[in-house]
Length: 152
Ligand SMILES: [Zn+2]
Ligand SMILES: [Zn+2]
Ligand SMILES: [Zn+2]
Image 1 (cartoon, rainbow, N blue to C red):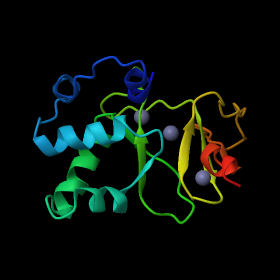
Image 2 (image 1 turned 180 degrees about the vertical axis):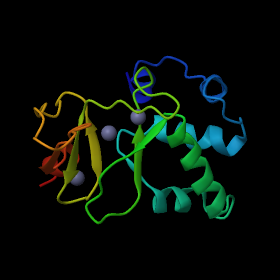
Image 3 (image 1 turned 180 degrees about the horizontal axis):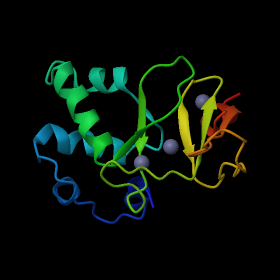
């Protein structure tokens, strides 16, 4: 279950508890960053995160926090149409330190270029190819997202 789902169910998310459980420092910025991810159904572009925090936080702090979040299994990199750095929340039950287990697909919108995690669509399991060792498979879906589809 993703954090934003918990949020939708109006359960109180204890950001500090989550950070502590992952062994991360509870600075105000990190709490705000986690909240930002938890309140977004979309993936977040690193450039947008930097703009969001404006002049309050320097870029290096943002990059370092994102790296820590990723290493601890809070967020994962998602594909981006223009190969920009983009992250999305992980499944709290599945991912942990240095261990990301993702069994979902990604959807990229042709209009807004946003990437979404699609939990309902599981990438196909590929039987091994001779001489290759397959660790995981991924599936990228493209088209119009819910929001763009309804306004076009
Ligand atoms: Zn993950
Ligand atoms: Zn869209
Ligand atoms: Zn994802």
